[in-house]
Image 1 (cartoon, rainbow, N blue to C red):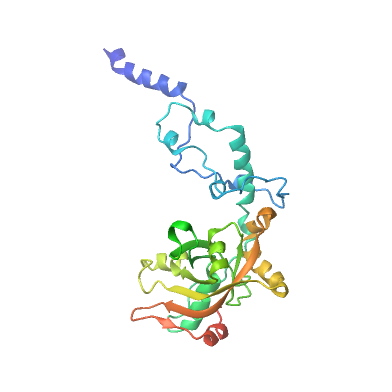
Image 2 (cartoon, rainbow, N blue to C red):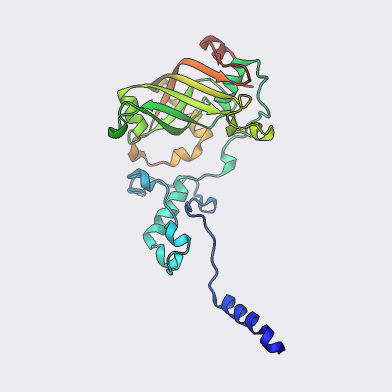
Length: 281
């Protein structure tokens, strides 16, 4: 009787012992590992000729989502080919970097909401990325708004200028749009940082400030390239490893209007003079 009671447990233990170890992954598992970071690696176009040929190759999935969810009896080891492993290793080198390479921000909290120009400069300076809206040149949405995410910088963390710099490639749809119509709007949200989470503000709460800069996107002039490079690479050091074959270049936004909502009761249109006179620190 006792043996019969414990027989199912014995069978279960036997099955578990015979199974290979496995790792649970989300349905979209991106291969970008901090353990595989290679600093100052040679990532010339000869080394990485095909990784960035199209948008789908930017981030390589580890396994197809159907197999992650158990729809196939094949093991992950059988699905991941040698070519995928090589791409994954190279991807981790191109799109990762050590955090100590990024200078830490000394700012702890935003300025008082009454100081609108300073608040705008604060958001522009401490935002690492923003949403850029252009007028599309894509066939199906030609003439309609199109939005895209870009890493940005208005200068190294200890040297804010208020001028927003970009590092872009002609292969990007947004850059194609800008060649047709150079005017764009760049939106930041204070929800990117910790303040709104700490205050339990929803991103659409007026007290969680949002800033939209509208202007003309232009290529950075030769005499400004050194600073633009320092501004971008000090905040986004991984960019220095991106393949040169994609003809990356620097752009900046020449401002026309500064729109800010940072409190209940309306929005502020900040004069350019006040914006550039203010400081985020």
